[in-house]
Image 1: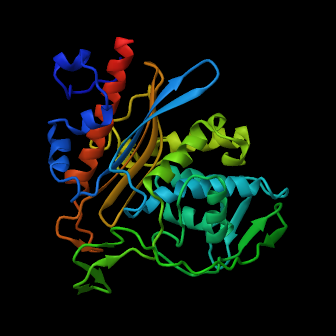
Image 2 (image 1 turned 180 degrees about the horizontal axis):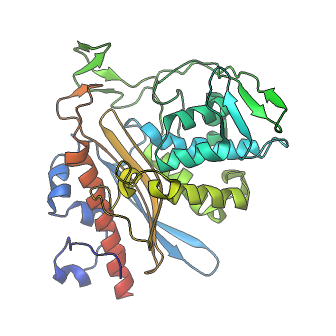
Image 3 (image 1 turned 30 degrees about the horizontal axis):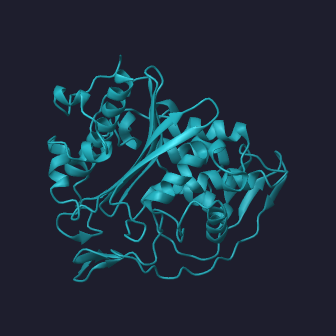
Length: 374
């Protein structure tokens, strides 16, 4: 086997009947996990884990969760880029003159790109500008309408990323129909976001704005809302579309789905980025997030991470093609020791990423043990 892990559990536990494997892993005495689970409320930990049982004609999901609660808010950051990428492909299917290789630029901008390039950049290096261009193509209202129609759960996309522009009107795209013919899209007017009323919508004791410190909690009431279960359900519909009704599936072709999956599992170096700046684990927190080493070729991780305002989230389907291991894992953690938001003082490297990496390793080891015992 080309993947080696440190053992998290004593050998005597190999034959133990584990009724809740997620709780078993989270109860580990490994420091990366134990220091977080001593204060899980402080770190706002939520986890969803799905074991996958395949039969001849179907897929059966065995679900486990820890503190997963759609009424308890966390900032989703770049995880919203996955549904936006999917829905861009879906909309392209509805316009005969366009496909993912159509060239375009945003009115008033000089960057010329394609839908395929932007989708690839979203997953390779989590490019905010690429995501925002796709949002201009879709519009917030259409994104939300399409997601709600798939019955994925509660969700609200309200703003662009990076600049956090909350302009309600989208910017027109200038599309190349051929080498010499250009056509603009119409600007889309979107409804203003209604403030969210959720537990934890205000966080911390202060925040930085315009280089000044404001001594009050930071409100996320007008931010994007993409809870853990919804993320998990979106991913399921891409990895296992056959497990859902036609109305719950995304309306993309098999070829588009394969392109999306290739993009999701791609590593920065495979997309031509410098490994010294963007190591394999740059966008892969589970299992490898705390390592600078290359990810072994037998491990495929189809995922989207997000990190901002001290919150780290990963939503992933992980597959070991050599050892017939596969599972879904989605988790979020908040690391903000000083309670001040927007100051860029967060314990990502010290606490957050090591926790998610150790969690991924623990789940992988459990799956490995079950495979060996079967």
